[in-house]
Image 1 (cartoon, rainbow, N blue to C red):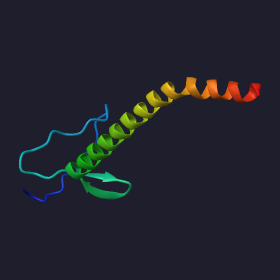
Image 2: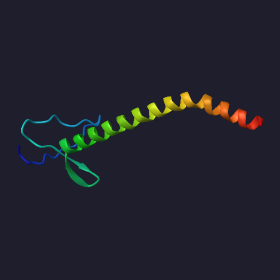
Image 3: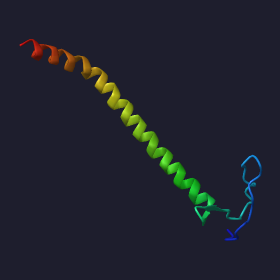
Length: 81
């Protein structure tokens, strides 16, 4: 693959130009040039991490829903004594 940097300007809709086979595309991000494929890979990794965290939070919420009535019952028993 070529390390050629393609200069481009986003169109009015914010789109990017099509990828040309065999050419590495770079984007300007926070003042630096970055390989668009590396940026995409990083974002996909972050997306997968967030998906796992969401799944774990959903499981924790399910467990809390199971335990909440028991905790409420224990609280009412201790306040009566």
